Image (tube, rainbow, N blue to C red; front, top):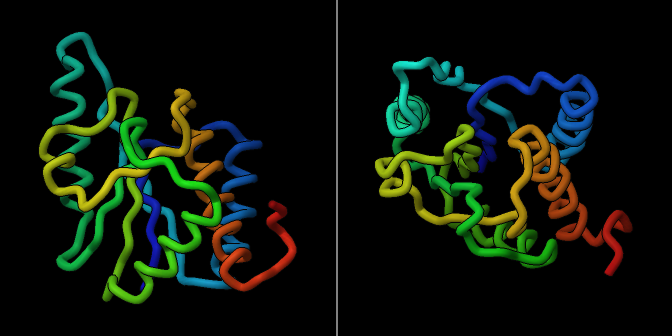
Length: 157
């Protein structure tokens, strides 16, 4: 199984991008992982929130492959502890044949079509965070999940 983080728009803050790259390299020591960046739908006066979500949704759906399991990182998703997230990744590794895809939407979230395609939703917090930080938090948690499953000392209860 390969894990992909699908994101809308580039990470523009250098320090956050550095952290993401650091944790992504750590994750790759354990499991195949990549980050796929899709172009953001540039907001203009003629582009409504709904049109932007629709345009970004088409990109997300277009990036999926047959057999992908899609997990949306969404504020209305299920909240897990780090240990529960590690267990979830372990279970999916046994049931997902190809890719486990986690998606971070654009500034307005996901289109209805993306919600309809999603296999599950996961929340990192009830709080709202900038999308760049969500990327960093997610990749760190993915690394933490790998160390938990191997009994390494990174995670402390």
